[in-house]
Image 1 (spheres, rainbow, N blue to C red):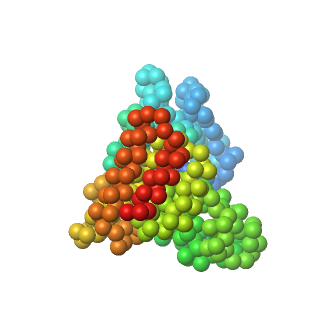
Image 2: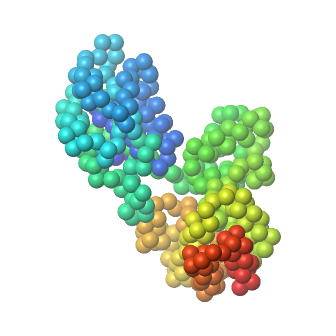
Image 3: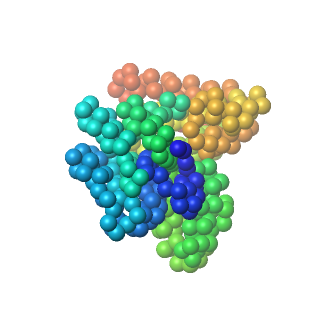
Length: 345
């Protein structure tokens, strides 16, 4: 029938046109949970839901539950949490497929995924559900409703943050809401947790940008982007502060170096795109970026930079990675020296 986002699902529910089959998945786990909650509310509450563990799915029980007639509700509603078709035996997958295909009009069968990587580690243009999970999703897409929940643009997230703070009796201006979204790398669950903490702190007052910088621990990628931006602008104090924060995370140095190089490559692409009159959407399309906020940030950080300067920094990072993998070195010292060398370029 349709692939919807969270807002479109809400409109579908309001119209009273519920599907008999639902599949909710995506990187925004909070949104996945919210979608399930909306369906549960629409069918009369949690007491009308039969919950099954998808990781230990009893297919006989599922078949029996699917054939039951609802006694005190309009629908017989079944929720299967974290069913990974890749881990099922071939015969069990066939049985599950048959049950799905025979769902009656009085039953609503819901699949939701939050506990395993349905993409099998794939990212970018190759980011799609694994083959056996996709087969189930494709069928439900024809016969029911699939809802893909991915992070929203930063501007929309900031709007949601403002509204959420208002519901808790607090005020946050758009610039501060944008900073919170960026600090949390647009991850809804982390944003909500941090916003709840900030609202409790101000107790009905105003949440400022400085409070966010002081109280919200940035995601790894956020700190790395702060580092690369400071390096390119030759702001030594900001760069070294970011280095301290990154080292305090105690991340394996090869991985950290790879993330820094990846962020610098993002900025190089943005710089080259800007020089050739290309847009954020052009870069997203050409390089398979899923989310716009990373590209938007790269365009901002590349302002005033030349591809040649960024290439010099990338060469230094490349040399550092070679040294890291070629013998025994003090990885922490190597990382710090590389940052200092980049600041001198």
